Length: 241
Ligand code: 6GU
Image (cartoon, rainbow, N blue to C red; front, side):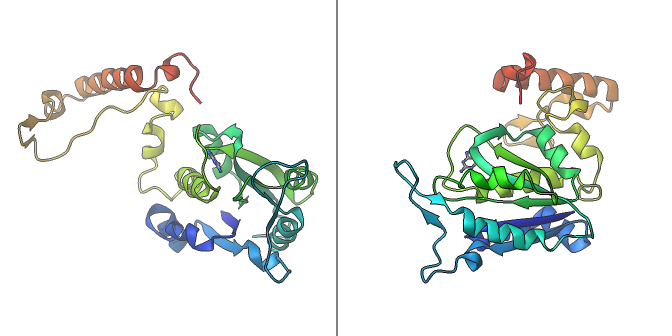
């Protein structure tokens, strides 16, 4: 999979060279390219934002600068005829969840557009939805809080979706067992323990040492159910997202 990210803070994305995503890049299952938006700002101050039409606080990122940057990325497809899926991180978007991560992971080419300030000029999403090289423009929000910019959200989304790319996880079953995976019945995971069996004044639940796989599975299910009741009752009501 090819992932392009256009940002005014290229260094902000450097954690993508680490850990699971970094290994996937080294192995060739992921090709991540970070682009500096300011290379497409041509005035003396390399301006990327301006005040909002209609007034109000904050700044809006300029469509002409973003348009030139996105066009430059779209002119370098990973393969002839490849089409890009654009992703705009924004608090005013659909909730990014397990299903969204899985959907993005199925695409061959993702282009992330993290904005700072009050966001992108609204014509960017409108324009790129009409372009033949673009399959879709998704606007995603990662939670009910406001970030200073979309870069941290891009790190979150790329790490979440990378787990669905075949060969990226050491063990393909890890994705199925995740909390929120359909295979896990929509429940949170049970608590986990490792050696030593006795640590300070705490011992591991006896059932996990029993070797009785049916009892262990039943215990984990009950614990997952209890965790879900405690932390995320919305999931039990089928309201989870
Ligand atoms: Cl994706 N971007 C910003 N700026 N704030 C957010 C967000 C995204 N998701 C939640 N808050």
